[in-house]
Length: 188
Figure 1: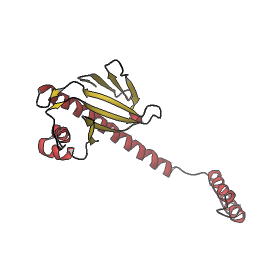
Figure 2 (figure 1 turned 90 degrees about the horizontal axis):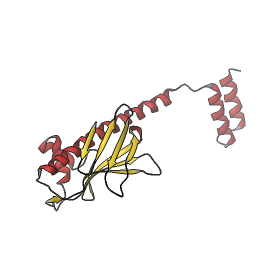
Figure 3 (figure 1 turned 30 degrees about the vertical axis):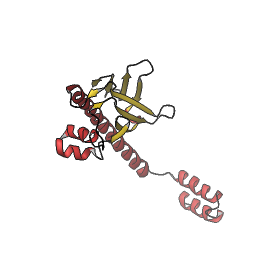
Figure 4 (figure 1 turned 90 degrees about the vertical axis):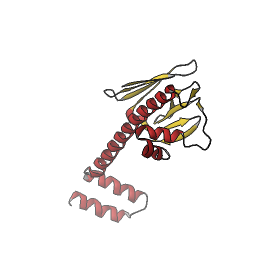
């Protein structure tokens, strides 16, 4: 799925499970990351976060205007409304110590908010955020599944003995309690 925006494009590769943010401009570099590394995302209008993951003020807009209204509600929820939008971005928080944030520029040139170009930009932002919402939901489901598998994984007798040995070494249990538990686990 490729989404072209005013100042670049975003490519979601469901087969490789990667997203590529292509940014135009002399000082902007392309950013690529795996779906698994996406932690969260925000819609930023004129430097102000208006929605995170489709929640907050955007829900009011969604109730009034339908799916696109979520973004309209989010971008119009400020006290003072500009008639032009000079910058609309989606930011990604990525699990990457060296570069933990990436920006997808949707609008970088002044656009009247009532113009068709701005409405198209909002639709692009909605597509991007919807896709990111699905990705984050899948990441959460996988994380919960992995956590359940870890909890449900059988623990070997040797692992239990090592755990009790560590407790004995740290003084939480006595050496005698450790020996008793060790004999019990070994069936002696």
